[in-house]
Length: 302
Image (tube, rainbow, N blue to C red):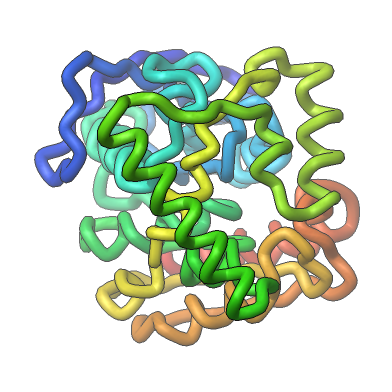
């Protein structure tokens, strides 16, 4: 039986570029396996989930595997999602990076965690975030990033022709300017910002079980994503970094992720899961094969 500690942390990050006026508390869970001695500080893995997701969705499969392997596993909800405070549905990559750093710094003080042996693990948008955090926190021990992307503009507009991209970018810029001038903006269901059918089906299904996903988010989330370029941080990563991709990923094209991998100069490894799609890496044979490789990386570098 898994043991779970629940905590609420104030966001405190001296590196923050975006200042919030209201205090924000993050919902954090520390997981340990049934045979895990509570009194012994162990190496830990901080799991960072993806776009609009919450710690109850997708992550539990990896939590169980990592905890059973003898690691403390930490999960959390980004501000505005799940059990955390904050404006509901607001996604600003820099703020989510602040959230990860807040939880990471807190992990170093937890009596059950060896603060010198903490790995970052992220998936999808979180897989890009952990590259950013590793570049800013060189004391992170090692990194696992799966299904990440290098450049938000490429991710959003990569399938558009030149004229369509120009019109779309101009529209988003006008919307951003209008919000700045009037503080008014458009909020839409999560699926309205999804460009692929796989994600739309996934979120429609998940919100039937998890009410926290039945929300509206700012349409300008698309603009925030377009302005996000984790590839700029990749050359500054010094930790051993393992990256996982899905061969048939229609959410984040394989070449968008490989560009991020190529930009990393540190010790690194890469695995492309054959015949897998974006959400298929969390179950079945795909999960077994991917987690085996990730555990091998953790045993070597954490």
